[in-house]
Image (cartoon, rainbow, N blue to C red; front, side):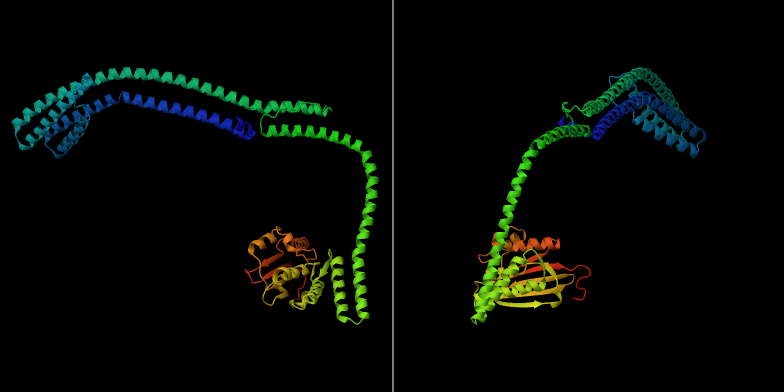
Length: 496
């Protein structure tokens, strides 16, 4: 029943039409089979009479062809005789040869016995004629003719008896045919009535909900929203419309309620606006205070650099100046678009600071196509990669660590490679990084706060593509390479 409710109107109509059509086809097939069966039985009624008539005709042919041969002794007459003799032998072979209590079957047996004797005599007569024995020909011909007359008499008697018996069977079959005709008419009437009932029920399931929907919609049009929701019995198109209509009424009621409530809350919102303006002013003051700290840091570093220069500590002056430049870039450029040249300069500054810190242990090389230095990139995308190479790649290895920065063009893509010869990275970790599942692991305790996940996210937003970076590591102690892909847009860097 639930499945029937879920059917669409089209599916329901198809089911009804298919069902009624199948019923009509089944009834017609039943009538066709029964009528054919009755016709076949009617044909069989007089089949036995037809067989006996054919038997009598073939017997007459044997007698006539034998007489013709005896009179003419021609080869044509002999051929006719043997052909009729073979046909008659086949026919009597189909007759009953066993003893039965049935009189008709007993007469068939007698005809068959006399026919076998008759054929034997005719063959002997033909042989005697061919041998020129006139006395045998005459005696056997007369005996064969006498048996021929007996056989004809038996065939006629049997034919008459079977005709009377078949007449009774024909009458019974005729009555059965009339009875079958009556049954078929009644069946067709019942099927027709059933089809009408099914169609009426189907149309009622469609029109009744539509009538209720029309009446309810008329009430809503008059402004009465307190109407009862329509009962949704089926899940067809009418059920969907009824459900949507109910949802519309509920939505209108909720909307009116929300409007009333919003009007009540409007005064309270105006009071809150005044409070929000006060909080906003407090936030702006705190924002200005937060900007004081970086500027204080830069001013302090500049003061230290000037003090070192006055005292003649050139290396200290240069170092403090580099640190100030690094942090100034970090703060000012964090959300800007910069050139690749600026990013590489920041990396140079970062490597310089690290080498002062670690006594020149960081071996850094560059292989840069200078024609690509004007490429626009998000700020702070190379320094975090170099920082990861130092912290996670070459810091604690037993051999000499090296970092290589490469910038080159490959077809329609500008490639930026940051590669180290450190401890490498497991493929499982690479997968987690690329799926943004390893955010915290990107940051070391000395990090500037911009992790690899941050770099990947900003590159995807900047380039509006997903495939912007790849991480390659051949295994443990075989180093790691991070590749950034920047597509060349039409008209850019055509000379490279």
